Image 1: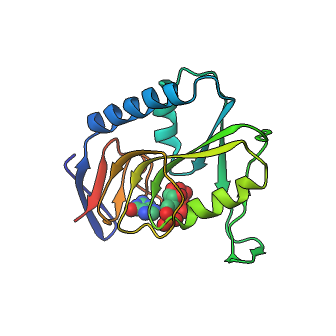
Image 2: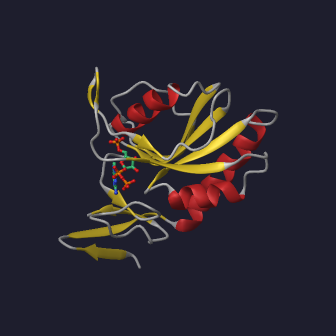
Image 3: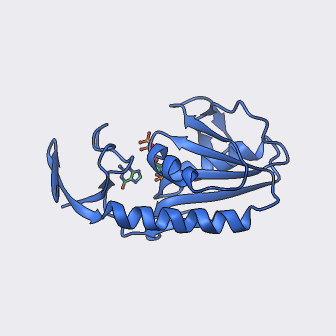
Length: 177
Ligand SMILES: O=P(O)(O)OC[C@H]1O[C@H](OP(=O)(O)OP(=O)(O)O)[C@H](O)[C@@H]1O
Ligand SMILES: Nc1nc2[nH]cnc2c(=O)[nH]1
């Protein structure tokens, strides 16, 4: 399927599944080197990261658990304004190296909320892995340790990413025409 139509929008293939898997394996290989001898926990951020997390984790050889978190819609406030509350932290992440797995970092607002809340659990270190990164849209300065692809600020879907709830099942990444 070279083109996909969802509602009012047509999307065209931007990154083929084979190329995605190649990068996923390369990231896993780098992580296996970097994380040797560390007490690691992988935390996937739902919903979008489920496919990346699943493929990535198959190639991780350091012994480590994986768990999934979600940002619940509006709850409470911090000094910085409204925040979405991070839910699903059942593991003890104190003193561990936490690897956040995201599908995409765009403005960086989501990542900021995740990192700020995770810091409250006293992890030894927080590292970020994202399959996709939009450097031109990124407004924050948190380091992103593992990036699959840096892409232009187009709206994309597929491989976990949705448009209005649809398109997450597509094996390739598509960009809006
Ligand atoms: O850098 P930002 O501009 O904050 O955008 C990135 C976030 O947007 C997407 O999540 P979304 O809120 O669409 O939820 P979903 O993963 O459930 O689709 C994606 O999974 C990231 O978490
Ligand atoms: N589906 C989708 N979700 C996003 N969240 C932030 N940027 C994007 C994007 O380009 N596509």
